[in-house]
Image (tube, rainbow, N blue to C red):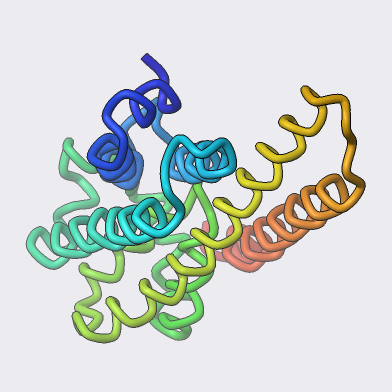
Length: 203
């Protein structure tokens, strides 16, 4: 059963559960695709926008906070812990740590936008003892940005597909969808470039 089917069958609890799994790095349930599916289903009237967005937002922050608490509890030992080594390996830890201690606020914001660094940044926030209040404030902002972009992309994509099925191509949906995709790709590229540009120096 895929993410779309789970959300359709279990509605809002299914959406929340999938976002928790995706946030914790469970394979086959990436957060971004779940949010895009959420947008598509909103466009189709399967789920209502307000509860869907609120539940999605809560799910993102909750899963991030669980990783943050794990980092605080285990500290640097988490790098060699078997339960977390696939999420935060020693190489990734040293790659991010140096930048993180100098620019923790920026790294936490950028980390929310990247699939490859997302969970690592949240764990590192806990390991380096970032204050709980600071983490929640920054993560709330970052989650709101990601949620807005992905759900909007899914919504526009759903409307576009609906218009194609009806034989009516609305140019505004096409342009809007392409603009959202371009913004997502640009943010991911710039964030990834910033986080990895000192890789050679660290190694």
